[in-house]
Image (cartoon, rainbow, N blue to C red; front, top):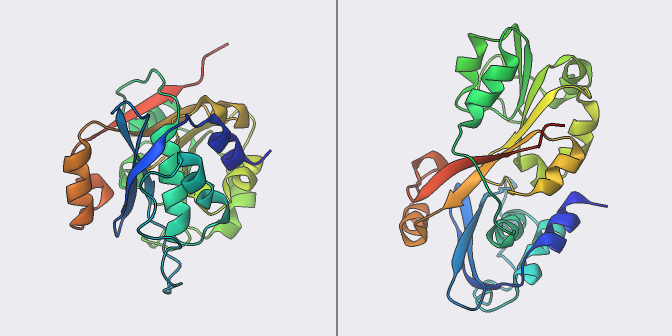
Length: 244
């Protein structure tokens, strides 16, 4: 079963309060009907060209979360981001830890081979402790970034793998996991990350996502052009797969 369909099936019965498409990050705020608002985030997907307006723009308020979440399957560009953010606003809350995902990747990859899908700000720091560091990026941000075509060769050799949750939006998540070694330590991270134990069934060991604790503050900065790192009102958290 498609992982996005599974995540949609796990969402709670909530309704959309508001949706916000920022240049860098998309936010969806939903409510359980009793005034308990939660905010989900996702990276804003850009296709490189203007694909036209978001369908039904201006009419999302009051609609069931799952109706908007379906765009993660059928939408294009920013519509996919709206769908993922809607999912993230309505997943059942889980116990989480306030640990930086970079620390866990470094702990499990020190002196070993580390692969990173997506160029994260911490990649330069990982270079100093890894035996080998391979960064795969569709739009290279560094001369050492590698094209996705090299994954089949190198991913099976990685001891620790950090995977951007953007792979859920561009439908490369499962093919990438299939190329990872069975015993590799795998972390899913980034703005779009769903805090769901479903990911553990796919072989992910750590899910590193975001909890928004000041929705008005975050939404205001998002709408005024702040990038994800610059958004106040959020905290970075992880949930870890139980050790057997």
